[in-house]
View 1 (cartoon, rainbow, N blue to C red):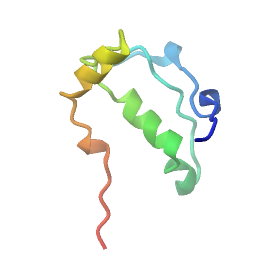
View 2 (cartoon, rainbow, N blue to C red; view 1 turned 180 degrees about the vertical axis):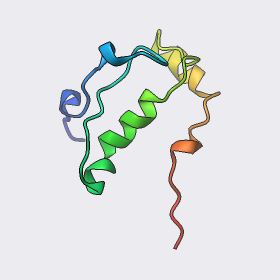
View 3 (cartoon, helix red, strand yellow; view 1 turned 180 degrees about the horizontal axis):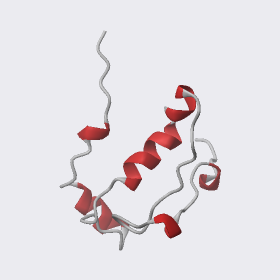
View 4 (cartoon, one colour; view 1 turned 120 degrees about the vertical axis):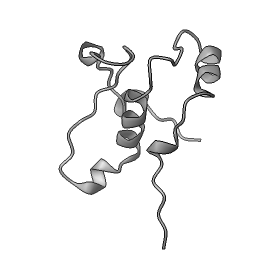
Length: 80
């Protein structure tokens, strides 16, 4: 396992939470497709698009409320 500092990848952006839930993360602008596809940017886009139906009060409640969320729309499938 690696010791990864979460603050190196994610910055909270509570002031910009106008729609949806209030736990938004800051998504930096990207000029290259490599950076746009970087893991942290992909995760931030999914996180910020979670609906208000997701319960953020506790870890257990969060996991339980995710069972009804359809995350397939965020998955890219590449065919050869």
